[in-house]
Structure formats: C-alpha cells, structure tokens
Image (tube, rainbow, N blue to C red):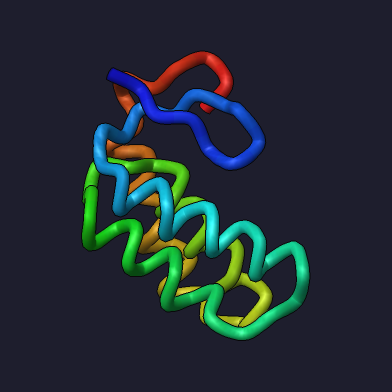
Length: 88
C-alpha cells in the first residue's frame, strides 16, 4: 500500500505518521518556517525506509551547512531507495 502526500503524490511509506511528518516538513520547508529538521527526523523515525524523508532532511542540512549530515542522509536514502516508485 502506498500513501499519498498532501500534493496527491503516491509514496512508498506505509506509515501514516511518517507521511504526516513528511508533509509538515515539506510545508515548513517551503514556507521557511521553523521545525523542518524535526518534522523530517520524525518522519524518518516513523519509517526509516522512507527515502524522501531522508532527502528532505538532507536538503535542510545542506541549507544549514551541515555537510556531514547531508552525506549521511543521502547515503541512507540511496540504501533504502531500491524499491521506490518512479516519481520518488
């Protein structure tokens, strides 16, 4: 089962909590609001195999200049991203 994000895109996570936290992270990121790091980390905690949550976290870390965390998050995304949908 795939869950849709708030834009109607199907995602491979099966965790409603992960998709909710991911949606909140995306909205906060796009709105330049606080909480982005926390929301994406919560999505990862809810579903460690949710690659887009790792990517969102990596993007936020890139903006903060935290290169080591960017690299770690991108590696995690690639490791868990073997069964992604084409869009993901």
